Length: 181
Image (cartoon, rainbow, N blue to C red; front, side, top):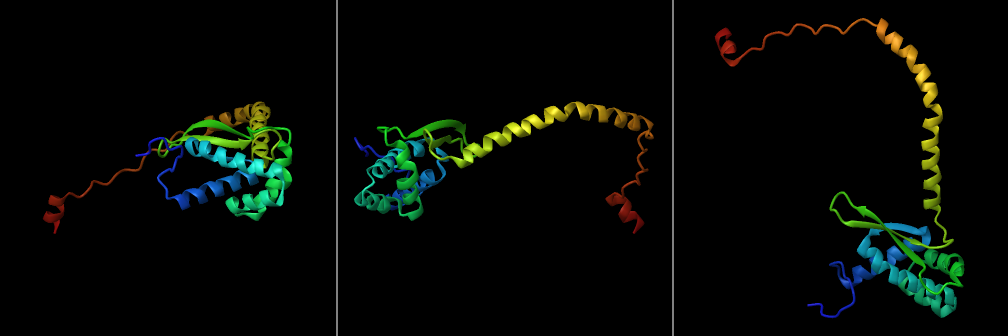
């Protein structure tokens, strides 16, 4: 029984759990926002905020502790050089969890976990303008399509009526096939 134990294991062995959380922390630092299940996002928040706090410290010992957990030189470098300095004046609360509904396959609660305030999120900023531009284009071209659709309707009226279906040959049944043979 798990009496008074404050940890979620997600039915994984300790080594797998640690590597999963390490990889998710790396992705959060590198991309600024990831999509995962809500319970995993809540557990990830603790680890990500600890790493950002280490990044704010900025010492060699803090960098080594972060490297021991994250095991990605690229992610640790970005954490210490780019992400952590943005939060120098902030005392915790570096991440935000946005619930986005359920996953179609297994109905699991899904969420985005992202870094707050000025953290680099290139994927999130690129997606929003594309959606707005795509929505704006059809509205502008809609009147032009209506004008072009009118001659098409006239052509359709001039076109001959539907073709008559070809005559179907009667199917051979088992009894007829035996009698012919």
